Image (cartoon, one colour):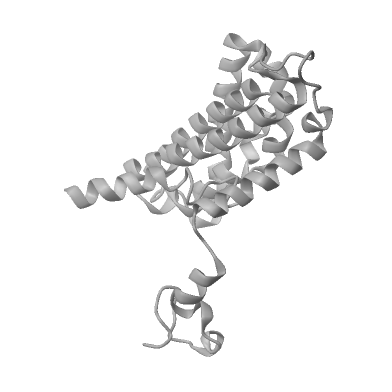
Length: 232
């Protein structure tokens, strides 16, 4: 029982740092760079994507044995599009300012690589609860990465956080480039480097982890990822 709970916990936490969809897997970078000019936009996009991720993962997991392989991608997109439409209507009704800020990127959640990727790689192969936790973890990681980017860019580019002035112009001159595309790429690069540091992945560790440093690894047919080529 404890082992099962531990595995479920791992399914949730992996998407936050170890397999963060934005900073580690480098997925969903287009909306990430486009909407993170303000922290509130990042939260709006992150929450919307998380809701779609969890719900689509659950439905696709439930239907995984029913959907034929030949039409699985169109079926996944149809499921995702349905939830995106629902979320978009709710945002339009209850948060019109966020809907206006996100613009075209809200309906484009349908083709977000993160959502379709988790449907194909995880939800279609696992049961409902792990799939829901996988979607929730990836959504939280996606939201956290965008929120961090949005806060940095808004603070340095406008001197505000969530629209509230934190650094008045009398003591700080906003760095306008931070809310432009160039500033987005700059902050994104720094956060990717930080995420890699937190994951503690270094060339030395890779060389010591099995076949990574073996010159014969490419010729060793018995090795499958985690096996040590010295024992193959």
